[in-house]
Image (cartoon, rainbow, N blue to C red):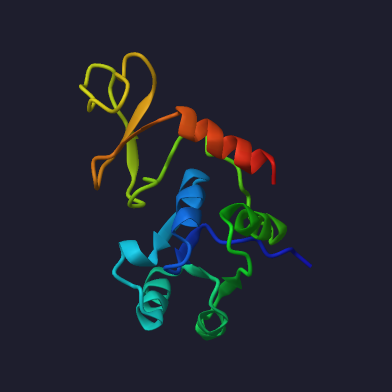
Length: 154
């Protein structure tokens, strides 16, 4: 008998915004209800069905209505991450970001000769990525290290 593995395409309810950021940084394609104007259960279920996504929620009624779901019981993001790890989810930072932590759009590496916004380091100093949807820039700075430590402590 083969062991079932977690899915890579997720849909998170409105209560799980911070978790969505962590999962995106781990490489999961994560649709978050408030980013998708899908705060109502029916709207989130429609997104999950249309895009073949696994629903992750703290709402037992929503979990019961979804064709596939993971019901979380904890409120703190670290505890939610532990629940997902116990359910078999791979929770480690991707070598390179694939999804924007803000909007879930795809990211691309910024060419070293391209300018970056004031808040970001220059791309010739360190590797910088840009979301192709919202334009947000990312690099492996202190936030990346804090998330890495949190995940290692699970």
